[in-house]
Length: 550
View 1: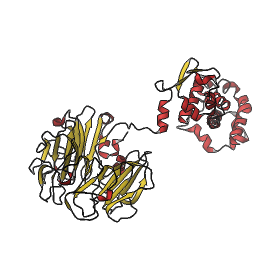
View 2: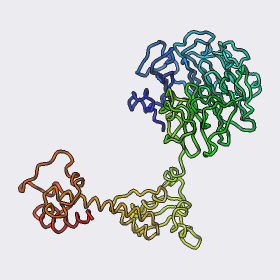
View 3: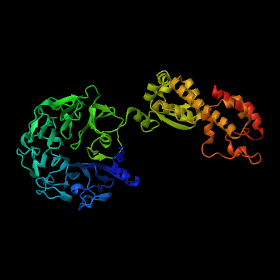
View 4: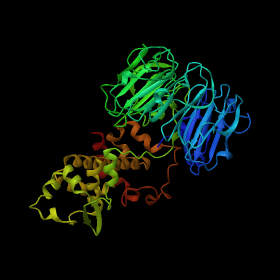
């Protein structure tokens, strides 16, 4: 699960408010604005409110989340933001809403008036169902369920794809060579646009001064052009940074092109690339890529869950993909991007993906998937034969055709207790042992019987630690109650750090002979303290401390 409080704005919210957040996006030139959707599909905003980008109907900033009643109950499926900033939001019903900065008609309402509240964008989109939205600096794009691409707003470099450089006040279908194509994805750089179609081809148009269109040159394009550098590849995902682009193929290959001032292409240098070049060639299969038009940062996630980042990372230029400890690409932007915006509308939900180890742990003692159960002390433990055979030589031998157990669905165990046997089976699924120290001896016997050497070592460690704890407790008790052991040579050789354990907090007053009650204060059992302290010290404590020291 993504921790949304990694973005400072959300760290102001209390636990109850955070628990209601289902989707969220942090945006703005300084990452000072945020929008989030709750579990019951209410839309809230808070932050600086630059250019009325919060859509609250006024220009007031707010640190307290405000609900956008106009969007109440509408299921949000896509959201994007520009640099003004302006906001685009698409609902499950295919409606498109826009608000915020509108100096270049990027809201698509035919005017240049600021959008102080969400307004429905309907021009040229009647009977169209918008599924995905994307924003550049001051231009906008929308993708419909039929694969049509629409663009509008600022068009100084041809980023609207209309064939001219005149600003486009309302949504206009991007046609030209996309006319007969079915688009499945769109992305915007600051002043450039990309689209990927259903056969895996990629098309680009708009500003190309850094090669961000990947066409092999740096000339602007007023209409879509196919990236021949990706010919023969089937691209599944495209993303754009400020002036660079990334593409991911169906085989998990990653390509990059465009501006490389901060190493955001991951090529090991800072040279711009006019055509796509493959990166991370020696890494495993890539399953997700991330970039955002307001940053120079790139990120990728591999099949095993490793997350890499490169480009501008907290002011540093990382020219090669660097592996992180993050669980998702979103964390890269929260912790290292400048500004620390979100690169997509973030889902604050549990990740359904489980590793092999996590899946095995989840299925232990699961009656729904098990094909075998052990009966111990009248209780059942549900397991899977295949797992037991893979993990344990004893079971590999047991589940053979000449053993009776191979055909049984229930196997009775009477040599070991339920806690011990369950811990053993759980160990086969998890590699961990969790049981009280008093049961560790029984598990050690089982491990010895089944020739499980690694499990034996774990049990021996548990027993040793418990023995050490008991010896330490005995030493502390003796010191605390001034037993005669303090007069021995062995005592005065004890490391002072050991004795400090007994004096955590303010020193307790020494008990008198008359009011001392060993049963109240000592956990070592009868005979430890009291009238027989002197004998106890000589017979037990001195050898215990000697053993501890040596």
